[in-house]
Image (tube, rainbow, N blue to C red; front, side):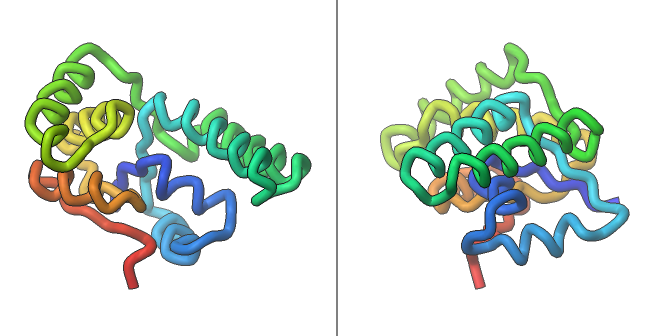
Length: 151
């Protein structure tokens, strides 16, 4: 079974067609694919749909449809949701101290990466994100990475 940890920047592509959506679809089409996200991703994706509506990238109806499809996938277990815990915050602090001054890692991205580093021990093989800075840091931390926007 292939297990992927998805950052919000990549997961949104499953629910809204944009650059990289075809790659995300192909990763998740396999019956043996497991998608792992942090609890933070749930909040970030709901926010992403609100932003897409506010900036008129999506109509209110389409934003709601995408949000509801996502929340359905969370509720029915298609997505494995990992609770953010104290060790994840500590790892995020370490990442910010180590990379914040040179790479500009943001707090929520550091928390996402903290969870991804933790679940690596559970067999999650690839960190999927569409944020180049985050991908660079994840690679430096020893994760295999995939950016669905890369050709």
